[in-house]
Image 1 (tube, rainbow, N blue to C red):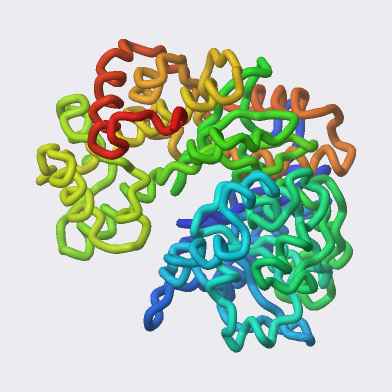
Image 2 (cartoon, helix red, strand yellow):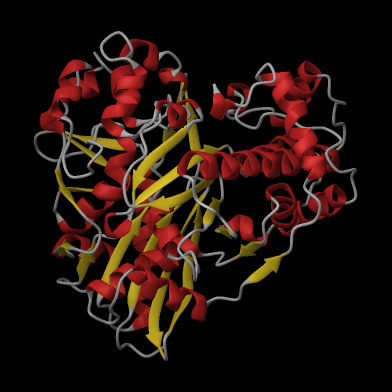
Length: 499
């Protein structure tokens, strides 16, 4: 690869990370993945943690490989999953491993928050759905802990890694917005809210938007990564979904997107947050996007259900292959069994197939007994959840949507893509698979002056750089019946958006 204009994306998801090198040529952005590594929860005692030092080692090795491949690097950008953080002491030293958002310490945290500020008011102030995983709930759950008492700085995961790379401490806005502590205008921390719920405002770093040079690689980080000192670290959409949405290859303004990975983030793009009570009850959140946009979306449990099922079968000594399981699932009857994929029973690691069978029993559905039946239940239920989120987004925003874009790893799941098209009654365009890394690199390229324009121009580059697959919708009638069936089992027959 030629060294001119090489950019590096560090992209960390909840189940794995990757380092990719990008280069622009002839209106296309070529991305070469140079390193891939595992990620996931580490259980110690009663808690779940992230192995942040192991991630740093893997990132350093990936950056060294990127340096060897690229020769000369003009920018690096880091994105990751949201809400989790590291705490630093007064010397800037890390006070232990970040706690995983699936850790049970937050099970009752929102009840504690509600004693100081009602959940409807929290939503009205921040636009963020009051979920137990948000940073605000995590900090309330950590109140009184020795680590929090010693902390002088809180950095979200991509900002923490950027600090280790450059020595600069910032809070990039797209990720900061997921904390539940940013004002709805996306420009300032809500100091009053922090005070109400007992969180020290002094912990939080200065906000920066995507598309800024944060700092340059320090001498220490250069020795650890092989990068040259002075290489810029560029702020991108550091929440991985924000970067993924940049790379949605949309050619029209009114589209729905599904960033499909461990989670399915299902939503639409807006200029302003929508903080109505109906939006809150329907579970929608307003996260900040690149160029001042708002990602109005709903969190759906996603491929976590399939990933954790695969781990459970492997622990039980069952020889399972994902491709074979999905092929078996393809031949199972449509909508034979469905569950609410967002049931709290499915949040924590563990025996996912057993939990899915339990939810089927509760709902009067046939119990799945084989991996193919479990996988079909998951995929059908995910497609149904996609349908509900897309339709609710249309109702709440008044948008007339004509297409659903599926980006991320889930774009490779052909069965899920086709079922989502059928369920939503809309064509699905699948790809790019590495949307997060692509969006990360596009923002870096624009910041470095290698390309210009707004999101429309960045998305045109994404379209030109990606093989896309279109799935035409079939009949949505079975899905409407299944939706009514699920609502009778879980919501008493009343659609959430109307409650």
